[in-house]
Structure formats: structure tokens, C-alpha cells
Image (cartoon, rainbow, N blue to C red; front, top):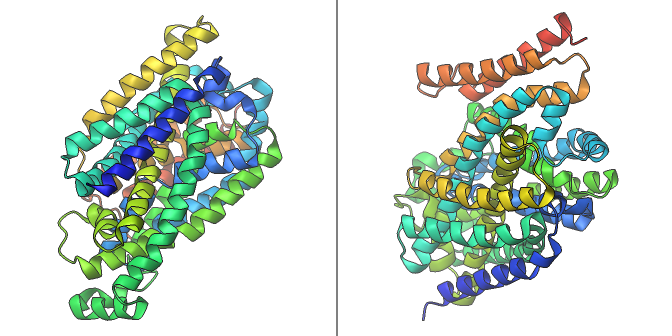
Amino acid sequence: MNVYLLVIILYILIILLIGISLRKYVKSSSDFFVGGRKFNTAFLFTTLITANIGAGSTVGVAGLGYRYGISAWWWIGASAIGSLLLAFTVGPKIWRIASQYNMYTLGDYLDHRYHAVFRLVMALMMAVGTMALFAGQLLGIAWILTVVAGTSKTVGVLIGALVVSLYFIVGGILSSTVVNIFQLVMILSGFLIALPYSLQHIGGWEQLTLLIEQGAPEKAEGYFSFTGIGLKQIIGYIFLLTPSFIISPGLIQKIFSAKNEQVVKTGTLLNAIVQLGFAFIPVVIGMVAFAAFPTLENQDLALPMVMKEMLPIWIGAIALAAIFAAEVSTADSVLFMITSSLTKDIYGTFIRKEMNDQELLKVSRVITVLSGIASVILALFLQNIISSLSIFYTLMSVALTAPLIFGLYSKGASTTAAVLSSGLGIVVTLWVRVVTDNQGYFLFTPQAIGMLISIGLMLTAVLIYPKK
């Protein structure tokens, strides 16, 4: 009997039952999109941290740790910095506005602050990027099932999409958040148990250092340095991830669910603190994987390989279920983001404005299914998790950072300036990416250059041609 697969199947059944049991509590679009704005600190913290610990922060980061060593910490570290800033700047401020004007999505805010056309452009752009993000989570699920059950990438992606879509469709953010509580317990307990056991398996930290020095002397010096990945890459992660975790439509919509401003601050801060500590765990496990399996062709298999091959069977089963929980928890958050944007920001705003509440709820569920299908197709063409996540973070950080920040903190930010800064930022990013073969200039990646151009243009417009 495959114990690993049995535990994962049991986990799938539990989360599906939770989702179905909560269907009766979802009676309106407000319940589906923002949980009736009743989330306390524990609920908000749970839904944020489980959204932030997903395929990128587990399988993807372990793969980076496998390749680069301890400096892979910066992927989650840069994200945690963004969460800290979100807790005390954008989060409370935009919550007040959303509460006052009954907003469900970030698109509602962009429409309110700028124009419906800008909302449409951002929604279309985010739909593409968010589907790439969802595809990345499905890849994480697929790699786990490949190691556990020997399934193909295609089968794993399909199973992941089916599981996530089913329990999200019936309960929206409410079922997602209650499931997230169970998932959080699984994730943290699984990883906290797996880390010491995997280190012990190879003889501890000193033995890990020795194995790296003997097996890959060319890597040894940079492998245990926090700057080993290179200053340019660290700056790139900060530009890519820090703003993304401040202005992410999915995270902001979760903040809209908070019952008051203090919940926003406390819940988001706790999320950031856990991110900072958790950042070390998948990195070290990835390093252990390199010491034990130095010839893996797919670095994304590093984490599930450690869980299956280096831990006692019962611990390995729990740990693999924890990884599966991490991917599923983030996948439902991403699916939530796609559904909200396409339903509210496009369909409900430009196609059928006069929808009643029940129609909106029904359309949301249909769009969830269609988004899942589109993301499955995309996942089959993407090669690894980090590349798929980078598509989303690049589009989001370049296009949204300047309009959102200046919109919140400057009365002079105009719609024209917002459109130009987003558009030019994306064009510059793509141009530098093509011209330099994605290398950028000096210490700046193409995405960092595009963001600086976008911010510079917005600042110039506010100073010289402010909105009247």
C-alpha cells in the first residue's frame, strides 16, 4: 500500500467535505467575495499566510536552495518585507476606503480612484498573470504526485485543478479560509518536523557543509553566503516581490474581509513575521537535497524527494501532505483572485451591469470553472514553478505599484498618468528583456528598470500635471 498517496487522498476528502459543508453559509456575493467583512485577526492571518506559503515558497524555493544555497532565502524574505509594509501602509488605508464604499476587489478601487477603462486594462492584464500564477501552483501539486504516485505532469495538474476548483466553487472565500486553518496546521507541523529529520539523515549541519565542499567545491563558498545568489539577483527579488506583496489584488481583497482596521494591521503583521521565519525551512531542505541527490534534472523535485526518500515513512507522509496543503492553499487564493477580477471587474462592470446578487454569485462559479481550465492548459506548457510565478509578479509589480501607491497618497495622480505609467513600464520591461536577453543593465533586472520608469513617470506627472 502507498501510504503517502493514502494520506494525500484522505487530506483531499477532508477539504472537500469542509467546502461542501459550508455551502449553506454562502448566500450572497458579499459572503462569497469578502466573507461578509467579518474576519477577525486569526481568520485574516490564516488566509494571508496560507496564500503566501504555496508552490513558490515551498517546492520553488527548495529548488532555489538546491541550486544556490542559503541565499535563496531572499525569495520569501523579500516577500515578507512587502507584507510588513502592507500591514502599516497600504492595508489599513485601502481597507477604510473599501469599507466606506462597499468595495469587493482592487478593481473596484481603481474604478473609484481613476476610471472604469483603467480598471478594465488592469483586470485583463492581471487575468493573464494570475492564470500563470495558478498554473505554477498546479505544477507544484503535479510534482508531488509524480514523486508519490508516479503520475505524469498532465494527470497531476488535472487532479490539482479539480480538487481546488470543487471546494472553492461551493464556498468562495469562506470555505477557502476555513480549509486554510486546517491547511496551516498541516503545513507548519509538516515542515517543522521534516527540517530536523532531514538534517539528521545526512549527519547534521556540519556534515551538510562537508558534503557540499567535497561534492561541489566550486559551489561551496557562495552556497553558505546570504549574498551567494548575487547582489543583482537580490535586488531583482526585492523589486519583483516586495511591491507585489504590498499591492497584490488577492491579498488586498483578503484585507477587505477584515472586520476593522486593527485586524488588518495585526493579522498582516503576524503573517509577515511567520514568513520571515519560515523562509529558512524550504531553503535548508533544498540544500540537504543537493547533498543527497546532486544530479536531479528537475530542481523542483528536490523537496518532495527529501520528504519521500529521507524521512521515516509516517513523517514523510505527513510532510508530503503538508507540501500538498501548501500548494492547494495558495492555489485556492489565486483562483479566488482570478474569479473576483473576471467576475466583478470585467463581466459585472462592462458586460452585464444590472446583475442581481444571485446572478453575480452564479456567474462567479461558472468563471471559476473556466479559469481553472485555462490555467490547466497554461500549466502544461510552463517548465517550472519560479518561471510561472515570475510572469505574474512582473506584470503586477510594474503595472500596479505606481498607480496604487500614488492613488492612495496623492490627490494629484490622474487617470492619464496611471495609464501611461503602467503601459510604459510594461513596454520598457519587455524591451529590456528582449534586448539584453533578460539580463538587464548593471545591477537592475528588466522588471526593476520597468518599475523605476513607471514610478518616475507617475511622479513627474503628479508634480508637473497634477489632477485638478
